[in-house]
Amino acid sequence: MDADSTSTARSSPPATTYADEGPPGRPEVGFAVEAEGLVKTYDSRGGTVEAVRGVDLRVAAGEVFGFLGPNGAGKSTTVRMLTTLLSITAGTARVAGVDVAAEPDAARRRMGVALQEAGLDPRQTGRELLVLQGRLFDLSRREAAERAQELLELVELTDAADRRIKGYSGGMKRRLDLASALVHEPEVLFLDEPTTGLDPASRLTVWEELRRINARRTTIFLTTQYLEEADQLCDRLAIIDDGRIVRQGTPQELKAELRARRGLTDDPTLDDVFLDATGRTRTREAGAVQEVSL
Ligand SMILES: Nc1ncnc2c1ncn2[C@@H]1O[C@H](COP(=O)(O)OP(=O)(O)OP(=O)(O)O)[C@@H](O)[C@H]1O
Ligand SMILES: [Mg+2]
Image (cartoon, rainbow, N blue to C red):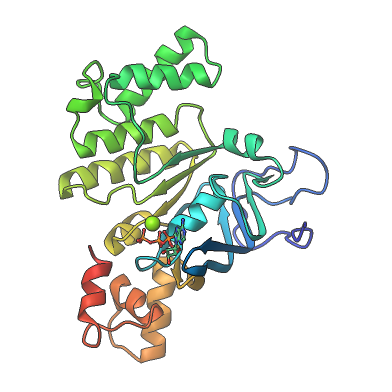
């Protein structure tokens, strides 16, 4: 199913295009991530769960895109479909112009993924892990060593590089996992809750790293529970609730829309936008508010 032949130039053309790659018929615009009508249903003993119910997304090359939503909204499910880790029930998804269902291997080479549960071998050192990862991506020994060193510097782990991962703190592991997702220089980096569970200082470190990675032209697609993080980092964001996108735009656009609609005198916060979008209010559902800002 190719629903993209109509997707021609839209506002703010991105810097990178993928038009010269792959067979004819691919979209001639530089969307780093495109999803149309994405659906995921899980069949479990308790019945069918419609986790994602028709998600359309477009992320321009070079953007930092935030994917927000309450617990269980469908964020991880969407990320796992976009990154080939989960089959797609219906709809299409492309990453860097490559259809993830039709050409999963090609799509995987264009993307890096860091999931919440980092699968790191505690017996390895950080450097060993990165070198091995480089070798798996066909780098020579020397290239893999150089790339490992470069990434260790990027995520500020040079001092701990030759220590075993089992002695790393949660924040260090998260940053190593981030580095390992970058070994093959992906065009698009997917991060599922990269800062959940980190202390405020570690969170700021990750933000700085993500800004540095993005400055090197890598598109970043991240999910987060932290609205301040989305506000600070993201060029654009989407809010998903109960498997459907309920808001999409720049943080500023979303705040301005709520301000106009409610006739507010000051700009609301992104928290207000989130609560409005997901039908929760501070007074009505205090429990849900707390859950959201975990
Ligand atoms: N393997 C599975 N089998 C059945 N249902 C599942 C499975 N994985 C997820 N779900 C359900 O799909 C829905 C979306 O889950 P998902 O993990 O995508 O949410 P999320 O937005 O990432 O939530 P969180 O903020 O808690 O990480 C939830 O209702 C969840 O219970
Ligand atoms: Mg999740």
